[in-house]
Image (cartoon, rainbow, N blue to C red; front, side, top):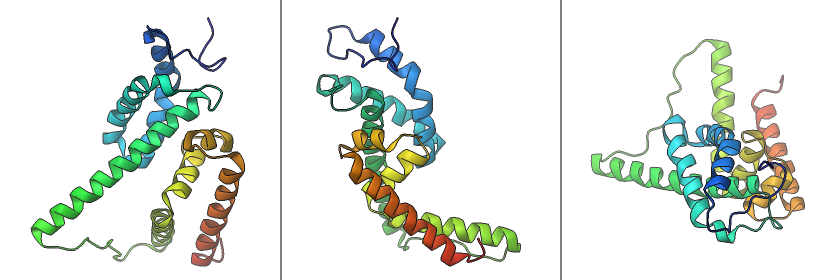
Length: 186
């Protein structure tokens, strides 16, 4: 029996139960890890399920010539992450409006030197990640957290390889400069 890794699955037939079971078995665990890194453990399982539900509904639009199935699934998941984060931000702003407060600022209390440095670098990195355009952040996280190749990221995001490679180089250079500026001894 061929696996999802050997050749593109047939998602257009009348009974796709076996094909989707194999896709789930092959990709769900790593997809969940990627999603948990983006939105937290509590939302990851729901987003994995939603990813496969969307894939099932859109199975007729899957074109194995255009993208490998892994890239297609991560593209769906990335779009679901974007929507999830937008919903969370809207909800947080609504709650804060109701209680009459602005967004809380991160706590920068006194800490042990090593921990302060690590937290400062993490804050710089988190701020830099939050400040990235969605396309840049998605490309970076799909390669670093999900382990996709630039070609797979290109397929997932519907872009060409050279655009993704250029975007990754630019983003990594910018982030490295920020971290080096924050800690010149690093």
